[in-house]
Image (cartoon, rainbow, N blue to C red; front, side, top):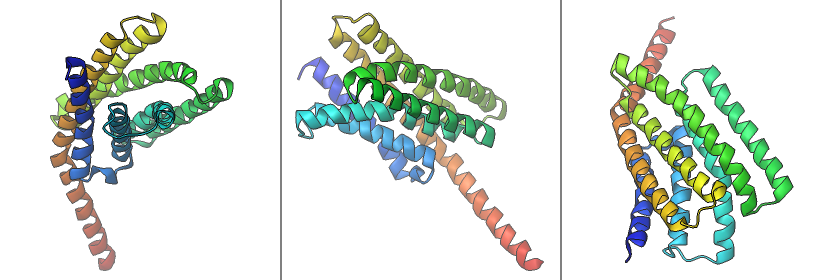
Length: 232
């Protein structure tokens, strides 16, 4: 097995790490983390298909790859709801998702459900995710340093920002410069995705204690509400 194939295989396995952590800790109960679970599952499935680990027809792989790119940005934006506890910021995320899906629909109407459409979709999508993730990351860093909590969220946002910063570089090489060194660009993709997936898994695991505390707090509030409700 060549270094290229080995790194590709490691990258595929790394996509399954966040899936395992979310599943093990039952974080999928939160819709934002369920979106993250779906995102990593789709990417892992596509990599397994391209590596012939899951045998599928070329036609199916082609259209599955296009669909995966269409879902990429909306799913990541949906996962960012996890970092927006207040309603106004959640409304911003929902607005961004609605605008981007409308943009995808327009691009599909113009170019069809083809790879060419992906070129026009992924560029703005990557910029959108980078910009909003950077804003949330700076906000979360300040919060985590001041209150010394929620380091898991900070690590998760760092993972998303790092991944999409690298994807922006790859997009630039592939579609702007149209580099002939496509294998080198794919090596960067495999390396960046592996690092980002591992960091995301660490961030998710750091959330475990905090999520348990929040769950216990919810139960306590319900019990108090029932108690005082009966008392009245």
